[in-house]
Structure formats: structure tokens, C-alpha cells
Length: 65
Image (tube, rainbow, N blue to C red; front, top):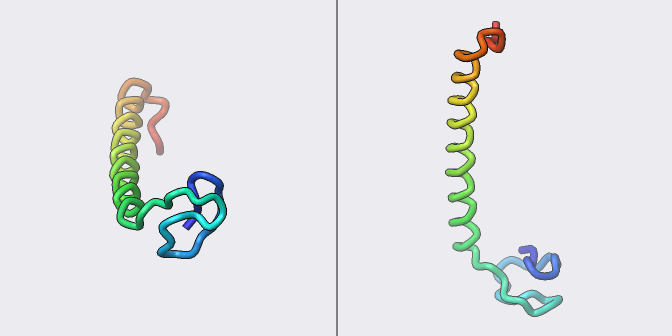
């Protein structure tokens, strides 16, 4: 687990950084953030597809063959 304070790589399960002593994020916290990030990525992908569809309607030359 990488310390968000100093960047030192720490062993899994550590509560505090071996280098600077900062509290390390818990695995549950990381998994929740990863899930939220994946949801945002999927929403972004949908919006990007919608944007491309609208652009191809407005600018027919952008339509893909």
C-alpha cells in the first residue's frame, strides 16, 4: 500500500506508514473509491457516446463510414 503522504510503499495491512508515520487508508476505503471511480468512468463513457451522436447529427461529415 502506497502512502498518500510520502509515497513510500508499505506492506499490506499496515495502519501507518513505515517511513513518515501517516495513517494509511483502509482497504475498504480504497475499494469504495475504486467503485465510485468506475461508476464515474462509465457515466463519462455514456456522455461521450451521446456527445458523438449529437455531433454526427449536427455535422454529418463527422459520421463514420
